[in-house]
Length: 154
Image (spheres, rainbow, N blue to C red):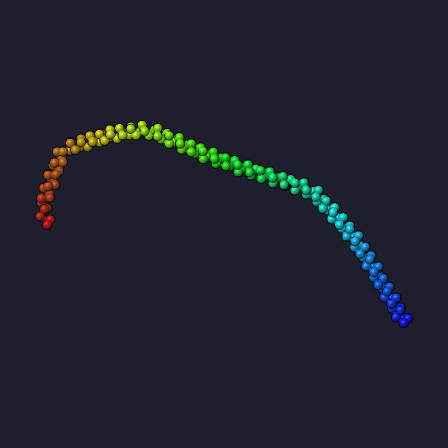
């Protein structure tokens, strides 16, 4: 039994030693973990100090860009309305001018057409009147030629 008791004492010492090693390991691990957490906090605070102004600036730029975009859309709508209004007014003025100018030109055009018709009729009359003797001679010659060929037709 003495031997068994000595084994118990050795095993109990090994358990105590491993518990002590484990405790030291856990204490060192806790200290290192705490130091790591502090370091991560410092890094986070540093990033917050450095990045936060940039993020705020980016957010401000985004808001400004949104406002500019809204204003551009509003201006585009105004320009579109202005162009439509101007086009309608131009068409109204063009129709008014067309009505004012075409009425007198219509009367003038009818008078001009009448005068042109009289001139043309006079020219035709002169040609036909002046060429009457020649025309009669041509008709007689044609009749003589056809008389010779009439027996060819059935």
